Image (cartoon, rainbow, N blue to C red; front, side):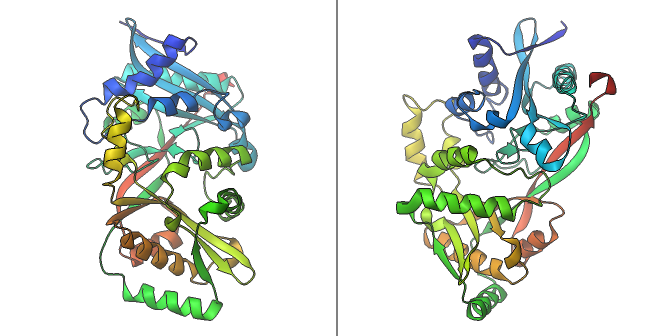
Length: 376
């Protein structure tokens, strides 16, 4: 009963690739099923802009004809050009609790990437740090927030037994509704009075222009972060289109200074709290009814980004965004929020979140191992 790994080529292969997690996680109450149509779009080169600067090969593992695992091997040229690296990535990794399957999948991805001259395999990333990435290693007690990953605890064991070790941890913070720390209110008022900076919400009537502003700030504010890859215009436009139905303009806030924009924060209602009820991953015919019913009962936010342009840092301006976001969120009925993800060694951001009362409740990990020299 040897495991066989082969590239995804046929329509039947793609369907097996998309469907596998629904069998693996069928009885896990904390797993949030992805929409099948979203995964189909992600892996289709003609339908997702990531493929414009990357090459992706999908693999399926089978034992006696039955799918037991899957993986994507990813050459992200934008990442390697930006960081001056020769790293390959793996993503969309799912497997039965079977070391042979896991090892065969990871070896297949490694060999494919090694043949392209890459020297290390890092992941998981589906497909980059701008999308879902990293393996959940702590905090399995609750479902993930929107655009965050989830996996069984034993995936850690499978990767480590296959020779992978930690590359970097990412943290998710939890903050429940409560009393705003007086020091945050005081600092925000002082900063506003001293600098003349104001905070405004997104203007949905100027959505395209606001997206362009987000794009400009995002690619400058995060450029020194580990693993960051600037988003192309096509990728930003694609994400803006995908997120528009769930965007609450009162939770996308811009810092405005007399000299121009200084930063922004983006929070989204946690649509996963509704999607978790669409267990088959299909919107039609009944999934959309469940989604619309449960979306009205979402009371949790995910703060995806909060960043300042380099020239506006260390002035306390982030306090204005934290306070305004908290007040607007609680005012709209949200009772808790997740701040994710934060690099484990981003001291400034970690300290800021701790000061407002947030606590780490989930931890995610990038793993990495060398690609053997004979493969490249």
